[in-house]
Length: 154
Image (cartoon, rainbow, N blue to C red; front, side):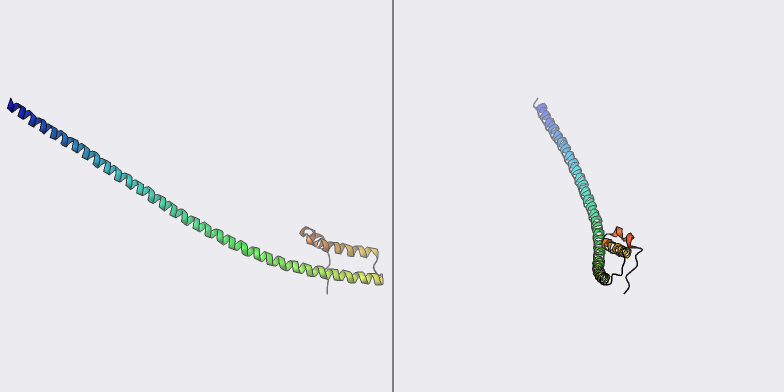
């Protein structure tokens, strides 16, 4: 019986070591699978990150291009504004000069009328219409009222 118990203990050791080896193999397989899974997950994560960086870089390029277009538009609009402002300033100066001349001519006409008494009431009304036309020249829509008037000649 001693031999049978020695054999059975050797068999159980063999069986235990075989079971331990199987368990070790299963654990190694699981560890390998987990490592492969982790590597694949890390690879996918790097790909997602790279795609995000690429998308953001593309968006940066588009936004820079749009920003340059907006700056160009602002520059052009500013230049147009400055041109209109300069033209408006010239027109205001011309209007002030013409208003001054008209007032001077009206004063001359008034003094001539008073001293000579040559104009009749009807002609005086025509002069008043012309003066009213130039007084309303400040509004662009009243310009059409003055179109048929004769220019002042020097």
